[in-house]
Image 1 (cartoon, rainbow, N blue to C red):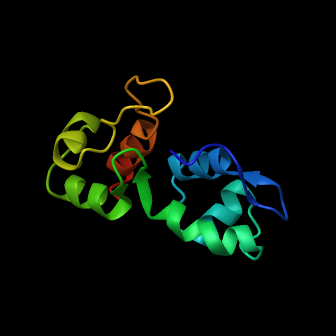
Image 2: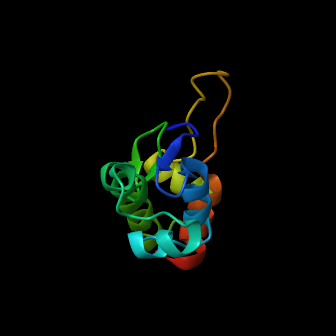
Image 3: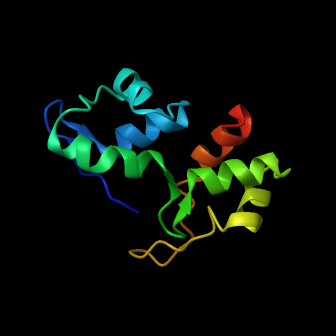
Length: 114
């Protein structure tokens, strides 16, 4: 997991705020600008937004594209997406316990189909 650090230095928007915007349906830089308040112009935004937007599960390194493809292939639950991609099945490196932080985003992808 990327941890909660400031991504947008100009507007002081952190990683978790961006992930929450994604859980709310944001999939493009423009949508994250609107939902999370990032500037999309500072060095942090330029360096990290695209990577954040294309990733779903940091523990298992599963991309948004892989999850969307799993949903299109018929995975209609978070568990089925996990079986197909590994997303949501990681172990937290700090606690050693099941992670699952990406599960709300996976559910949103299932709900929206994108």
